[in-house]
Length: 95
Image 1 (cartoon, helix red, strand yellow):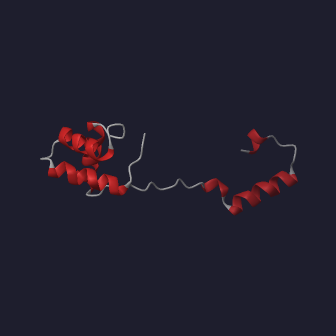
Image 2: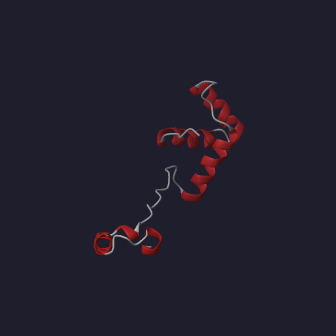
């Protein structure tokens, strides 16, 4: 799936409202601007407009990264000490 820049998304929103809130008219206008091979589909315009109506923005929502609580320096040190004390313990039992 191709990602559109914020400038391209803004152009899509502007053209949508200039063309009487018509998805088909917006796609036709974009074909004349970007060329027939680079034109997007009506469903893409609808998705961008739904996002704009919902959030008031065309930017992507930043997702938070998942924390990895098991990789703290204290846990790493504790496992290192445990392995040094009993190296014959299996990984499954150690977990």
